[in-house]
Length: 148
Image 1 (cartoon, helix red, strand yellow):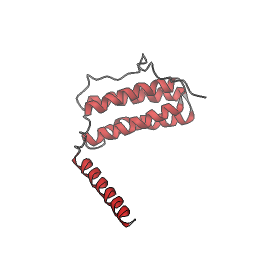
Image 2 (cartoon, rainbow, N blue to C red):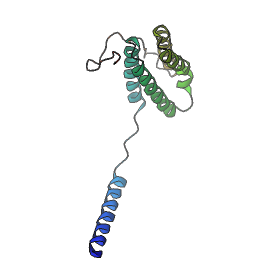
Image 3 (cartoon, rainbow, N blue to C red):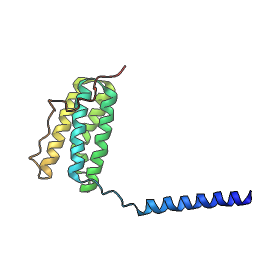
Image 4 (cartoon, rainbow, N blue to C red):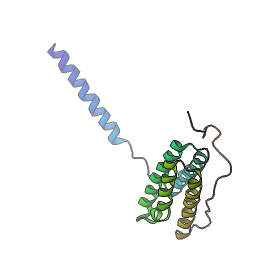
């Protein structure tokens, strides 16, 4: 019995060491570039518009959170609070509109967010990138209607 316990402990220890060695040897994934983050932001911006336009407030709220996380990543890359200063008030207004389930306020806040994005692009010498309300839904595999 003692040999069985000792063998089990030895096997567990070897497995643990092997797992640690594999994890320690694995290279860290490279951090996403600013262009990659902004591509995701643009997709979230599209999804936010269609969620809010459909009155799917839980999905709109989710997309606002994802946008905030992405903007935090951009601020980390750029240093400072440049992005937050440009889009922060619009994000706050979007939270309020979604909380109140107010489509008119949502539209105004969404347009304000787009203007904030464009303002930031101007500040960072990327005025050639212009964000606007999406007109086509690229997500044919997702329903934006509220679920009951």
